Length: 230
Image (cartoon, rainbow, N blue to C red; front, side):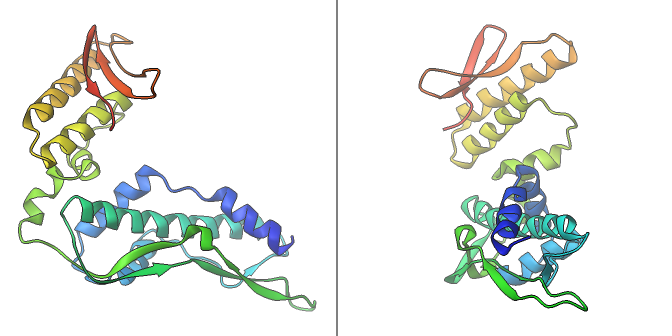
């Protein structure tokens, strides 16, 4: 496999999911680490994921190594995104300069008994940033679940939640964060009715639809509760 094909294969396997970001947030709030760089390393280690160094582009393990490299990058990006979302939610306070990180992966085509060449991939298109240090407000432990949708949903521990209900609960948390209590109650009401509809096994009573402008709206029965996102 050529280096160009190898890098393209890693990018094709790259996936930063909302589930990974939510899991990263849960990891962050359980730690007392102040260095985001160390925190990202610890987050990846907790997932028992490592990136082959160097990644050998020859042999039977190439596909597996490319998958591991993509997973490594995906988790590191998810961790960085989680940090910024927690900062925006007021759970973390950034301090110091903002550092940029462009992921790199070393590769080689050299195997025992054979020549080849080595080099490195620079994933500049995946550059992300984080502050030098982070701190936690005194009240963060008590208020975090009410200022971040991912943490709130994890606290509820609801299984197989309908996407429309999940979106309504996220909207409720967003409204609460900005002291929009009427909106909070409306979205909690939408989620509650959606849950009851699901319990009654009546399909189609809770759904998210898009209007012609692309705005998503939450519907239950014949009632519109509000926008599903902003």
